[in-house]
Image (tube, rainbow, N blue to C red; front, top):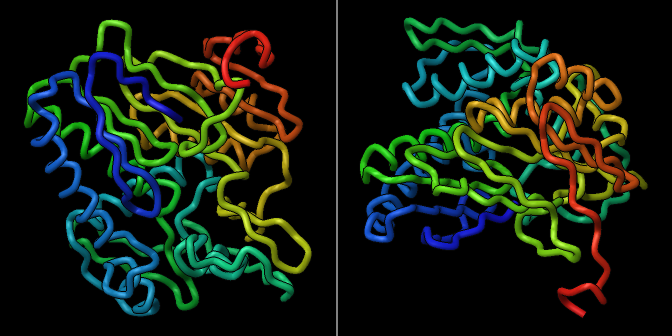
Length: 320
């Protein structure tokens, strides 16, 4: 997704293995808002990174079988992930850590070997109900052999937290984008935040993707083409079906959803990829605006999401 910034000012920088984008409606607020964003990103990385041995998540996973007391931020991230699991009836589940690692995503994506000849190992997650959690004491007990992965919610949570904190601090409209996860707070530009939808947030394409106006809340895109690798002759990606421990059957290439928060949007878009053919009915019952792109490129829009404009060809304008 690309954010239009005619009027508002934008800064972008690498963070959390993706690109962080900050847009503010008042140019004078950019530096202060960036300080808020960078502080939130540093905190969420230390709490929730699966790839830092010193993160709370890594230490909690290593302590499986023994109770641990966690920080308030980790507790918020855990409860956000468990709420996502409840809302989706386990279709999005934080206990997929072992399954994701077994498929080959056991290090930062930049370090994952794109090709591997070894057989794929499938590990079925224990499921959200196996997690022992005492909110009042912030005490966590994971079963032996279980590892948490907050990949479906932590980045979206960081976007929501940073946008809200920054808007309160600087008193203007703020948009935070972390890869495919966008969150807004404060007054939006008159025409809304102009967001171009694409399969990969960091790549431009022709014809350009459709543009939607986001006035409040969050928007998220989940897909199966940006982070892929091959093992045992199979193309794999980072979205796991908790019911099997394997990648879901290929139905949707990209799913974009708008919701009241980035966390809710990303929960829904991830669930839709896993649900496959059941996704339109599930999204429809939730009343969420969504755009789903099949693996053949055909597009389905739901819940008031605007239809894509007619496709242009190069001789109708744009790059030749």
